[in-house]
Amino acid sequence: MENQRRKFIHQAGLLAASTTFLPNALWSATGPQKEKLGIALVGLGYYSTDLLAPALQLTQHCELKGIVTGSPDKIPVWKDKYGIPDKNIYDYKGMDKIADNPDIDVIYIVLPPSMHAEYTIRAANTGKHVWCEKPMAPTVAECESMIKACNANKVKLSIGYRCQHDPNIQAYMKAAKEKTFGAVKMVSSSAGYFDGRTDHWKQKKAMGGGVMGDMGVYAIQGARLATGEEPISVMARTFTTRPDIYTEVEETAMYQLEFPSGARAACQSSFGIQMNYLNINYEKGWIKMSPHSSYSGNKGIRSDDKIIDFPLENQQAKQMDDDAISIRNDTDMLVPGEEGLRDIRVVEGVYRAAEKDCSVKL
Image 1 (tube, one colour):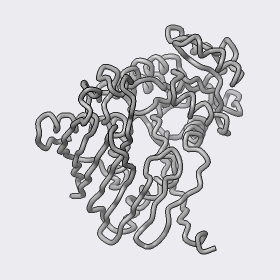
Image 2: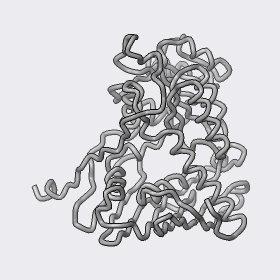
Image 3: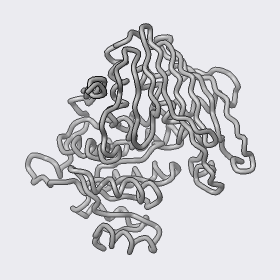
Image 4: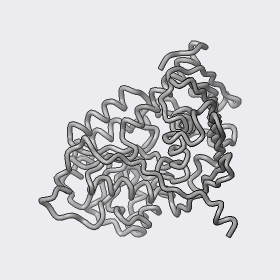
């Protein structure tokens, strides 16, 4: 009973109620509504295979209906496991034909970051809604082009920031919004793991590799969401302890963000160091999250002894159901393209600051 009393479970009302997008014809009041949105996964690597596809077996408002792959040998496995019909299977060249497939309502881009802009724009041009994995794209310019394409086609765009759908993360976002402990003074935000791979897109600059777009986004998100502000300047250093592997991109980055209120954030991200925590110091208290950005089990404690430990069956399923509900109800996406763009502005700033070895404005 005591443990139950200490549970801090408070669902935060974080979704905006209105939207700037026009309703998609499929979900207009004049047409019939499906029980579930059909999702097509583009790219059948680890994240689609081991996380998204299984999560789509748990969702209530969307379901796996199609795949896009450049690997013909994977097709029989997916057909047998998920019952995907031939008419819902595409290669990359033929992906645009999804425009004529009523089974598919959302195209989910799960490719290396260097391909996100091209395939998001192609997906938007089919008239289907678009979900895109993080990082949104390697550059601000590409992010802006993705948002423009989705707006032009009157479809919704969401970035796969699963953590923002996690009520444990929403708990400290609520504290920032309501100033539960007063103003934020200092944040320490870290995200990293030891990656033993030696020939992966994360180590290749041309494919959008480097730690900043991957684990760096988690650390940036922690600082941004903890303060409820956008940073105005950054100082940074990048380095590697394995120069034989990380020949083109950084393995580790350390950076300090300054916010308009005067709050500061010390951030670290790495492919060579295991770290996963967020510490927030306020005027009148603190919140500590550990782990902070895991696929499950994110939890924390507050200085008033309240525990942050929300039950959550599956992050990815929650993310996709939330986004499906937003499409069905024609409300704002919880994590729209503009949110992905904000992080990439900071990522570009980190690179500029590291190159110049000085603080740069954002």
